[in-house]
Image (cartoon, rainbow, N blue to C red):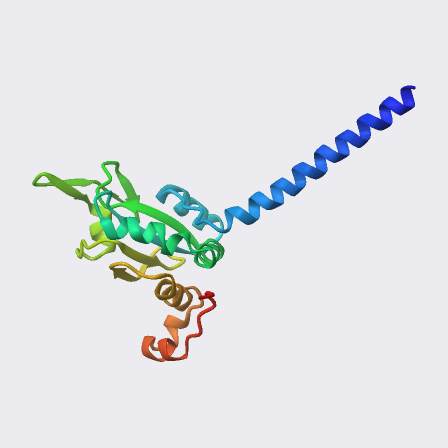
Length: 186
């Protein structure tokens, strides 16, 4: 009887472990279908450990096109997987009230009329406060390029692959654009 009980407990434990392993694998796969946004601080810390480019989505809460991009482009599974695999993705509220540090300088919120802006957003966008905006930083945390306005999944795929693969260092954008083949299913 004790052997039967021990066998049943062992089988139950194996079933539970198997189910947990399967669930963990499914969860990891699902996580890659959504962008794993990091905080600014997390991305900076992670880039010190493992050099990788940073993709910043600079947005505001009142921006209609920011919300549309979040609900369309950033929800596209191929885009999410590509961004997760090739960048440290960061969402940065352009009206954030907290201090942020970048390259040994502290950036703060600046009141401007009824609203205001965060100095880091202005710095990264070189004063062009238009939203949504995507900013690419290289492995040394230098701005490579910024893009303002809504980007469709195909547009963002083309832009992101251009920077992730370092094509921007050797291929003119117009040449890359003409030869680009999308991997996103229609």
